[in-house]
Amino acid sequence: GDGWPVVSPDGGRIAVARAWGHQDQFDDLKTGLYVLGISDGARPRLVAALGYRADVGGASWAPNGKTIVFSAHNNGLGKPAEGSALFAVGADGRGLHRLTPWETDQQISGPAFSPDGKTILFRLKPAGQDFGGDYWTVRNDGSGDAAGRKALTDNLPTSGLAMLDFAGDDWDDVAFRRGRLALFVSPKLLKQA
Image (cartoon, rainbow, N blue to C red; front, top):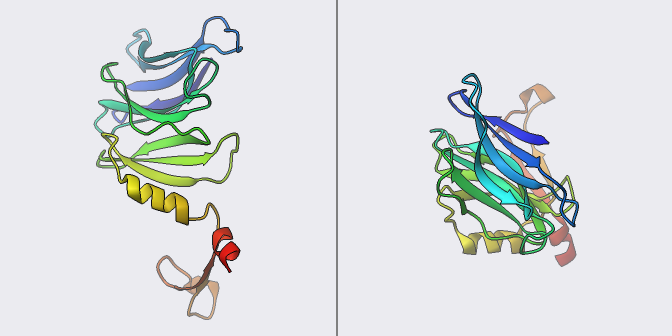
């Protein structure tokens, strides 16, 4: 089956995850990322073949339309077991490479390019969970601040409560950047108290 279609910035192509073939011993199908023209009638072109080892997740086109990033989630034969990572590949199928380290206790999803194409935003959430998690960025070449990521992982909550104080007589006066943070509480901060 097909899933996760995304239209290129010029509107002429679609990148889509596809699963096909016979099920393996783990009941998995072969998976890959395809690119196809919207109006030219060309056959879909396989640009990233993951075989039976991983499922292709959501994808995003670079603003210039030359690169596609996507998440991959190991299953069955994939190593590391239950691993999740971001990959990039040229829209022509060249240069497939991993952008992030393999995550085994969390799942990567929802990659999106910044408007200038230099940064990719993605979500890192607990495996098997559709809610929660944190948002991270990585440069389009896969580089990033590893120490900063560790500090965030060690110190930031996955949830919290913020109390903002707004000066004003009614809710019509409440607006973006018009308030003062009065209190922030997170599960980690509560444990330390």
